[in-house]
Every structure is written in structure tokens, then in C-alpha cells.
Image (cartoon, rainbow, N blue to C red; front, side, top):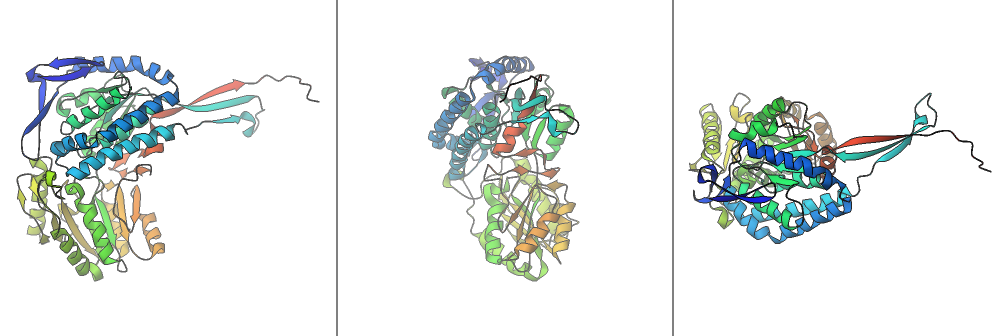
Amino acid sequence: MSRYRLNGKWRTSDDDRTLPVISPVDGSVIGGVHEFTHAEIDQVFATARQAQPHWFARPLAERTDLLTRFAHRLAESAAEIGDLLMMEVAKARKDARDEVVRSADYIRHTAEDTKRIIGETQFSDAFPGQARDKLAIVHRVPLGTVLAIPPFNYPVNLAVSKIAPALATGNAVVLKPPSQGALAALKVCELAYRAGIPPEVLQVVTGRGSRIGDYLVRHREVNMITFTGSSATGADLARKAGMVPLLLELGGKDPAIVLADADIEAAADDIVAGAFSYSGQRCTAIKRVLVMDGVADRLVAAIAERTAKLTVGDPRDDAKITPLVDADAADGAEKMVRDAVAAGAVLVHGGTREGNLMHPTVVDHVDAEMDLAWVEPFAPVLPILRVSSPAAAIRLSNRSEYGLQAAVFTRDIDTAIQIAARLDVGTVQVNGRTARGPDHFPFLGTKASGMGTQGVRPSIEAMTRVKSLVVNLRAKDLALN
């Protein structure tokens, strides 16, 4: 039996409607979540629709104060939730706890920034031919009910980055956490309720995406969808959602472009950290290196040296490389590496696996005909492509279906800026690894990497709409002297 909330009240589910959560760390069953039915989902959305206007009617200062209390409780629970997260998604203990602390910081920042979102006023006579007889008062209002769908790799942080701006601006939220990561997400929401946030405006729907995903995104009560996941799933979601506003963070094949004048040792540090953090299971991970021929040997040697020092094993021991979320991810990455080597690429380091645990892998002399140059492995696999010029690197980068981020390593800032201007991505990092944060920075992707802009302020704006109140002024004779 498992307990779950429906419309703010505790219920008990039958065994056959409980989805077990199996740890990728040791294969143990660490809990279970309720599999919601379509009828229960209807009740969730009906309650959210009824509760949302009352939530928006509460003073903004009151809503943001409740969010600040939520952040405080979350920070206090970093060890407990982080350790649960560690077992659910095989994230190193320290990284899992850091994710919870970062999430609390995000909530605080969002609560403060929401209070600074102000509208504007304008008179009609700014437009040609108009008299000064109208005054527009422009402000922002919530969209209604936001369906929030975070991924398994950051089930706390990427849930909070959707929940906090939605609630702060007066929306209701229906959260669909990933099956792997749902236990931690449920704990987070319980802390929100204890902080005073009404359970009717923050509801959680759990279950397999294959069973309830389509029903959720097509639901008539959804007023906005914010989703993080694969590009294929995002594109399918967009087709099914119709006219509903979307905020999508999807896949990436982020390149690190290393020019001949780069600080090779510093570049290698950033590339290894960017490629192998959380075992490469990040959309913002460095997924390929495009390096100038003249410095390629030095860079590859430096990357191999650092990769060999990465610890591999159990997240409870704070290993840097831990088991992947499932066997399918390991199978796909292993096949791409094997196919590339068979086609002439050179295995520099790694290439081995034990179950879901894939050792950090560096593959040199990858060419543009290999899948490894284009397909995103959600695994600790780093392909290296040697190029003859910055122009060739730009062409290879822009040929990708993805456009999330890129990194450029060079001592020449003028060249870096010119390359950045020609890269079709959302963000270019100069002399630093690709990364999502800091969380108040704009975060976006082009092409198959996403739709819309995230970050604290951009997310607040995305989850609201502009509303204009026009006051028609009647001329009066006033004695002004």
C-alpha cells in the first residue's frame, strides 16, 4: 500500500496501482508511488482551477512570504532529501545535497524578484493622430494552471524552477515528476505544504508517462506546460498541446571549440568537468570537442590524464562517475562508442561498463560520418573531432539539430566574440564549461533544444501574460490658475 494526496487529502492506493521505484545504485526497491487514473487527474485539475483565483487574490507579499518559508524548510532538509535523491537517480551524495540547497536559493530569489515585476502606464498621444484622452495601465496576470514536468536528472531543482515562479505569480501548479525522482519531488512538495502553501494549488500527479502523459498534456484545464526532457518527447508534446503556451528545455549536443591559442591545461579542466559531471547525464554537458589540429594531441593527452583520475563507483562514496539511470542509456552509449571505433575512431580512455555503470570514455578522431558526432548520449562519453580552422568548427557546430550551448576556448576575446556571434545556440560560454547557471541568467535553446527562455525573471514573465486596463479620459475645463 502507498499513501498519496488527492485534492489535498490523504488516500491509500491498492497494491496494483503502486509503481515501485527501483534504485539504479543497487537495484533495491526504495519506495513506491501511486499511479493516477484519468478520473483522478480530472479531479486534480478541477480542484486547481477552483483554487487558483483565490490563491491569486492573496496579496503578493503573502504569497512570496510563503515561498520564502518553503525555501527555509527545503534548505533544512537538504541532507534527508539529498540522500533520497542519491538513491533514486544515483547522483553523488554531495551533488544531490547541493541540488537541494541550490533549489532553496532559487525559491528565495524568485520570491524576491516577483515583487519587483512592475507594469507601466502610457498615454495615447504618443501615437500619431491621437489625443491625450486615454491612459493604459499595463500589468501582468497569471495564466491559470501550469503543468510542470521535470526530468529525472534534476528532479528537485528543475521541479522547483517551474513551481516557484508559477506559484509566486498566482498560478496553480500540477506537477508530474519523473518516475525516477518522484519520491524526492513528493518530499519537496510536502515541505511546501508545511510552509503554508495550499495543497490545492500545488498538486502532484504520479505514474508512468506512457500511461498518463498524453492525457495530461491534452487536458482541457491546462493553461501552460513547462517541460524538461528529450527533444523527441518535447516535439511530440508540442504537437499534442495545441494552442497552450509552452516552455521547453530539451536536448543538446554542446560543443567545446578549442582554438590554437587556448590555455590547453585550463581548457582540459573545464572540458572534463563539463563532460563528466553527473556521469554526463545533463543536457548542458559538453558532448563533443572541436579542436584545432595543431593543438589536438596536447589537448587529448590533457583530457585523458584528467579523465583517468575520476573516481568511478557508488554515489554513497561520492564517486564522480556513478551508475546511469537505466540499462537502456548504457546500451545506447556503448553501441555508439563501439560503432565509432569500428569506423576508425580511436578509444583513448574507458569504453567499459558494469551493468548501468559506464566508465568515463574519451574517443578521439571522431568524424562527421559517425553517430557519435551528432547523437546525444546521456552518458559519460566524450567524442573529439579534429578540425582545420575556426570556420570548420562553426560549421560542424551549426550542422547539429541542437542549439543549447557552446563553449569557446581562446586567449583572443575579439575572436571569441566573433565566433559566438556565428554560433546558432542559446548561450556561448567563453573560457568556461557549458552550464545552466547561475539560475538567474537567461537559459534557452535554439532548434531542437527548446522553446522559450528560462531563468528567474524570464520564467516569471513566461508564466504570466500582459493585461491592459484602458481608462478613457473625458475633457474637463479646469481652473488651473
